[in-house]
Amino acid sequence: MLYGKETKKALDNFPISGITMPTDFIHSLAMIKKACAGANQETGKLDSKRAKAIKMAATQVINGLHDEQFVLDVFQTGSGTSTNMNMNEVLSELCRSEYGETVHPNDHVNMSQSSNDTIPSAIHVSVYLGLKNNLIPSLRLLSDALMTRSNSLQTTIKTGRTHLMDALPMTMGQELGAWQKQIVNNIERLESSYSRLSKLALGGSAIGTGLNSSPAFSASACAELSEITGITFSPNDNFFEAISCQDTAVEVSGHLKTLATSLMKISNDIRWQNSGPLAGLGEITLPELQAGSSIMPGKVNPVIPEAVCMACAQVIGNDMTITIAGQGGNFQLNTYLPVIAYNLLQSINILANSAKLLVTKVILTFEVNQENLQSVLAYNPILVTALNSLIGYEKATEIAKRAYATKKPIIDVAKEMTDIDPQELSKLLDPQNLV
Image 1 (tube, rainbow, N blue to C red):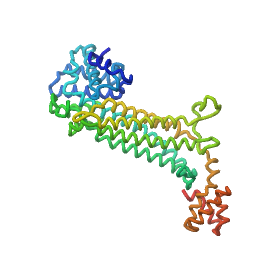
Image 2 (spheres, rainbow, N blue to C red):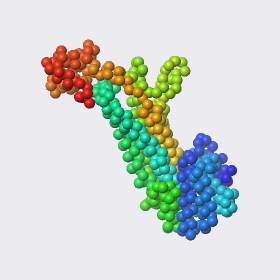
Image 3 (cartoon, rainbow, N blue to C red):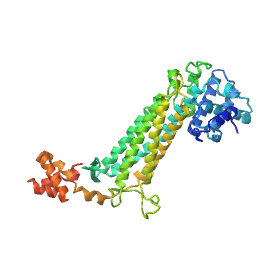
Image 4 (cartoon, one colour):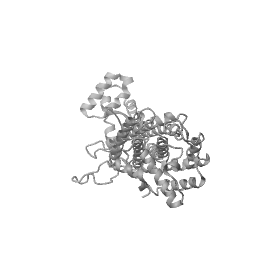
């Protein structure tokens, strides 16, 4: 056991959920401690031996060697002080036990810092890293897969639908192209938050005044952190804003919610297209991944789109939690920081995993049922829309209604009810010319 008395107190005080802080957050907090040790050495406040020991201990935590030492419940003191002290104590003990240096958790590991600036900074760092290294690469894979299938299906014509009812024809390539554009837009929204995530509260100390830190500390710590992460971080130009609110976290959560609604829409479209195989639309067939029923032999369910929809529902719920938390606290400090960190990182991780599953087990592997697509296309009375400019809306409506009633192909009914040349009619009603 590497943690000390303050962590033990918090462990006793908060037996609420058994859910601990995400390892991504813990590793980011360790990066901040490493950066702060370097900055404190550079500004002359911390001797080189202690600084080196803290940095080596922090590197162990960053590399995941002590994840089991971070034991505190997400639902703890709202500033995250308990988790900050958990980190300070673990690093202090590692310095003593492994590097032979006497390093105090508060006086040395926490030098020039407060939980009130390190925890908000760790939220920004962990979320930025989660987006850059996990979610956005997964979304790019999904975008590429959708583009590949869209290009391959540009000549595959199907019946479009509005209000779940038959509409004009389109290609499956056009349909998947719309999904791909949704993903591209979501990537752009998420990346637009980078500029605000890169601004850190670090150096603001308890409320934003920077008490007990050197004037040069913030810039130095951010420079050290930039070197550790490969991302350019810089001090927020208003520490009071950075500590008192979590508006950037709320912004990112809103973008994650938008992505969740996009993935849910796409997944539900896929479920409808795959429905059947006999009594549904049956436009596509998804791979058989597992038995669909414990009682109905041979049943196959769209398990991946269903799982993705549930993950998206969780993200939408997380956004509500973050929204409530974002306005929480009073005056100079938001006091919902741990739950904000937990929900943001959970949303990022489950959306990234969902996107990857859609790529490998749905988008690149579904089969198109050409026969089903073609069998209904010729009988779609909405094709008569192409004749509006020649015969008018009212006459076209009559043709459509008779086609519905008689279940005849629309071209046959149009031949009966108009004097348009049959060759011209065939050209006008050819679905290939309508997409």
